[in-house]
Length: 80
Image (cartoon, rainbow, N blue to C red; front, side):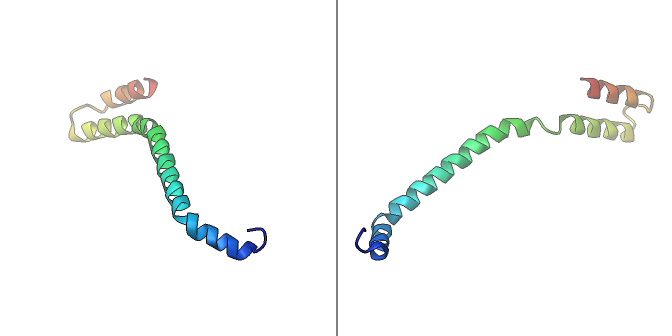
């Protein structure tokens, strides 16, 4: 590698390239799985208030709750 840097580099890549690629692929898959396991719990909680407000709007439109009850219910959802 010292005497002939370019041919030495090519020989090294040919001899060790597959192992490097496999390690990189394994590392990328591991990083992706760690990322997904970190994001999933946080993503599951999103949309809680929006989903509840949407449900309340549907109930109001169907007539299951009155127009007077709707603001009270939305306040209850938004204040917790």
